[in-house]
Image (cartoon, rainbow, N blue to C red):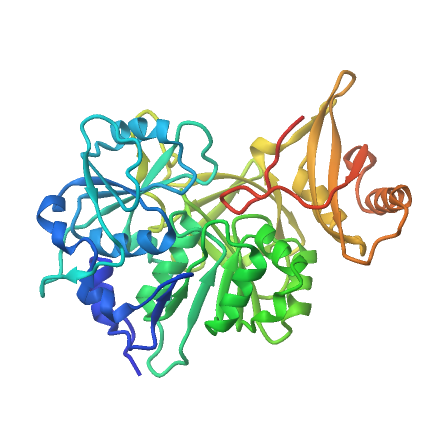
Length: 464
């Protein structure tokens, strides 16, 4: 078996250090390449002299092309800007100006290119030979923040910080195949790609727009052992009817609050799998992982300041300090990423109950009901425990009397709901009133066939 990976200054160095065997494959929908091959060859090898030391924007048509380009660019360029697939072309000029980019790296049809950027095209299926030596430049990884809408807000990471939470595998372990519903050009997906590369494991990439059922079947055919996604991803997977197409050993949730309903549903679907939910953000990096099957996290994670991550709660908001944090915002010198004491204010509200902390929701998402505060995620967690409910989304609706009221969209379990929608709404409302103060219970409940999921894998919270 391969030895555990040692520290490396770039992804190609990590691949060489891990010496992945032929069983470690990067799987895409229509292509598959051994990771060992990517340590020796890559589609950007012929452009090395043009790219060395530059700041580049990477606009790849799909995740496969993006992964191959990342491996080739890391250690070679000074700064690499990862554009997610939904980036608006008119925002590229802002991205170039904010990051100081002087080149645009792309495959397929060239995107609208801002003035002053050299266009460098590559074919992900045409691999050239890398030199025998490994680049030693410390490339800065620039990513869009998860809440970006409109003009992008970006942060800069180091490879050391991005891989700081990744455990190095023990020699002689069983082969691992990672999969994720995330896009690897976003923080959550990139973490999984890096886990595969650092650990010499295989990785299964989703296709843009791929139906969840088809992806689950492909994950099963590739023998996926470890899989990650947001709770919204997982609810959609469970509702697809094809969850049993795969038999994972590890199921991981992140990006949204993992309530008890979704954790229990995953445990029922795969009783032999280890179900865990992780806390991470693009700005604060990876904070912690919980594997005890319960929502929230143990108070000891804050009380005892364990490991490489320090956490505290100020005014109900979780703060994190560690070497895994982003270094700074990029192109926004007036914005401080961390406070004076080095902690990042995540904006995620938490509440302690006994020996456990529970997530309430985002500070910016609080609904004000005549001066009373309601966290939408807290109400959703209660609604989702109703036996007829698959998933819900709580939002605000304007009210001339109280300023806002709480309303909920609800997707019901297939075959598990009463035929009468009015009776179901009343049942859900009574369920909420048993566990919530009356002002937090929804004033209106709408039964919908599905919830909108954004490109970042999270439920879209539009206010009407």
